[in-house]
Length: 375
Image 1 (cartoon, rainbow, N blue to C red):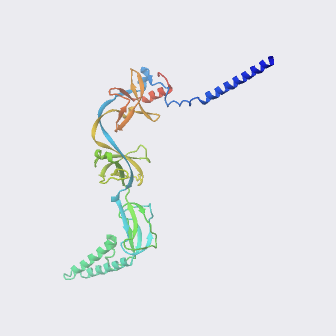
Image 2: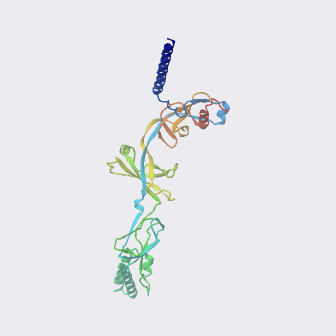
């Protein structure tokens, strides 16, 4: 009997242990997900109180958030392009053969610099005609009957040489006794700038109109901005535009909105806005992506604070509001338009509240340390 009781006790104990183990596993499986980590800055005090000495030492100053007239800014992305008014395309003005090519793509050239030389039978013929006409004009100088026709023939020969790109000095060199035709026609740069297209090499045959070089003067560029259709009523030609590029963070390049296009791109619903930008050092490059901003027409009332009062805290804008004689409270805000001096506040502040404009770095540090006072 005792043996049977012992076996029953052990069986009940085993069943109880199995039941408890199952409960523990079920509890573990039904446990909820771990709590998400707190946001940056969570748990830190929202206010800091300083001593009078600390306020003076930190040179803490405040300004009042107030309603002011504020113009809206219109932003538009775009890219830089060559100034089409400063681009030239040099083509062959006579058939012939390229004897020398002195520049390649990317070279900087000066106005009047020799770029290439062409051997051309037509050029030799025109020079011979000019030399003969010059000799005839010299022979008939002072002859009332012959001088006029001789001068007319000479002027015609000069004009034909000029159309080939021959300079006045080169033509004058043919207007002397014993002058001889030059074998090669010079191709010179009509402006100072950069060669951005050159596909021929010495020895290539050229025909009338064959492309030789494309040059541009990069001292000014066009910022071609894509203005949204919804912003067209707010912009007008002639307004100043501030252009920024990722290549030079923090730098601003200014120009005037010279043109607003007449056609909307059906794919992007934007209109081209052209801004001419000075580029004296050549730092800006055609093809760069840029962002332009201009003041919209018309003013509106907005709650604004000085730009220096807005601080960045983990990527979010904040201000420090004076809530006591020496107590300052961290306040998250939502910002809107910005001008050169003021920032629009959409949420987080009310008109009349005092915000810290100088010394907010100390307050931010005190908040981060979790202190409630300062020395």
